[in-house]
Image (tube, rainbow over all chains, first blue to last red; front, side, top):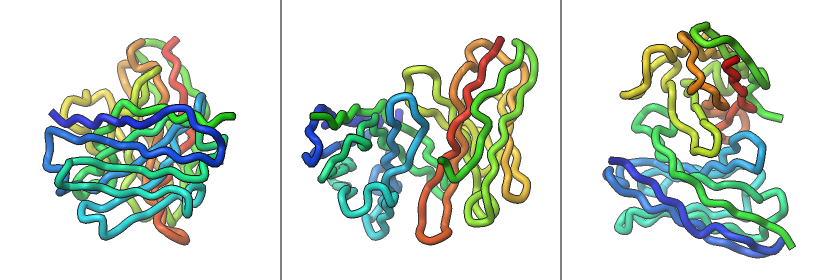
Length: 119
Length: 111
C-alpha cells in the first residue's frame, strides 16, 4: 500500500524557517517524481514545487522561488521542503504527492502537515 | 485568481447528473493532460480522473472526464450524498516556465 506521511509542520514567526519531510513507503520511491502542494485555510490547492526521480529537474511556483528548496533522499525514501523567509501567506496545509508514471498527475497524496506563520 | 477557471459551486439532487467545467488555454489544457481531484471535507485530495478521461482503480464509472480544445469537463452520474466535496482540475502549464496549475475548485452540493 502506497503511503506518504508528512511531518515537520508547526508554528513559526514571519521570517523564520521550517523543514518539512515526507516519508514514502509501499512503492519504489526512487522511480517517481514528487510534488509539494499546499492549501491555505478555506482556499484551493496551490502547487509549490516538483522534483524528478533523480533530482535532476526541479521546478518552483513563483510565489516560493528563492525561498523554498525541494530535495529528496532516495536511500531514505524521503522528500523534503526547506522553507526560509516565511511569510503570513505561506500559512497552509502542505501535502506531498506522488507523480504518476507518465501520467502528469499526482496519483497519491499524504494527509498533510499544517504550517502556521504568525507572530 | 487561478490559471484554470471552474465554477465555484454546482448542485443537483441525489440520483441526478452534474458536470463541472474547467477552462484554460493553449499553454496548459490545450497541450497537456487534465486530471481531476476530489477533496472530501477535512481530507487530502484524491485522484479521480487522469489523462483527461481515465479512472484509477477503485473509482466508480459514475465519474467521467473529457477534454476538448482548452476546456475539460468532469461528469458525475447517479449522485450520492457522499459525493459532496470540492473538485479540482489540474494540469501542467508551460507558458514562461513549467508549473502545475489547478482550478479554483468547485463545491458540489447534493441537495
